Image (cartoon, rainbow, N blue to C red; front, side):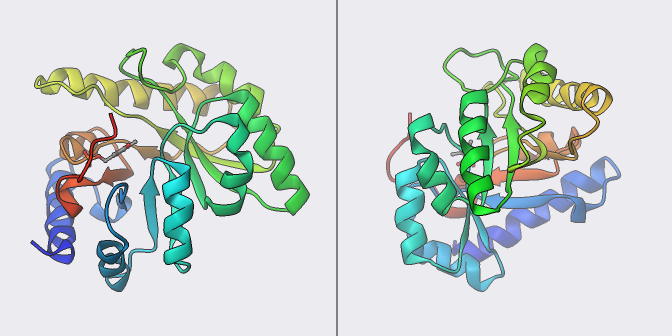
Length: 230
Ligand SMILES: *Cc1c(COP(=O)(O)O)cnc(C)c1O
């Protein structure tokens, strides 16, 4: 299936999932996750009006940006602190913030340039040690420690649910993200918490039923990735 047709199919599934729980589908955006996929496929989506793409490795993101200068990129993978320059130069939005030191370094560079970078804080809702993200119980403390970094424009939260055949286990990650959002709205009200990026190809309908405002879709749009990213 052409990537444009896959986008239409994903949007139909989003609408159906939203309607099931009485939500307005227009509240939910699709972030195409283009990692490992060709710029040709990305160009097709741009012709359909997509302008923002998710990538999880900075070097690939920077390379693709050179080939698609009119596209914008959201970084959704782990960022090492010595890669601040690459983020500031190439990333339009950072959806995986989980380090105070990185936040501080970004803030200072961005201030120098008079810019603000939209960010989502990544929360590790599955308690898996190999996943990055702030533990749910540390989210309020984390948010307080970065709230004065005016170079960052905090817009909400991102999570990757556990990969499990049991939908209840997957859903519990989404429920936890909502709980963290409620705590943050209550205890760190000076920042914005509306965006909830949760749900991928295998679980986005469930995420929408639990309040996702953004779903990150790779495989269901572009097909299987040529290589895996571990
Ligand atoms: C790769 C990736 C996705 C997309 O995964 P699919 O299952 O292919 O839709 C979403 N979020 C993050 C953080 C990713 O790294």
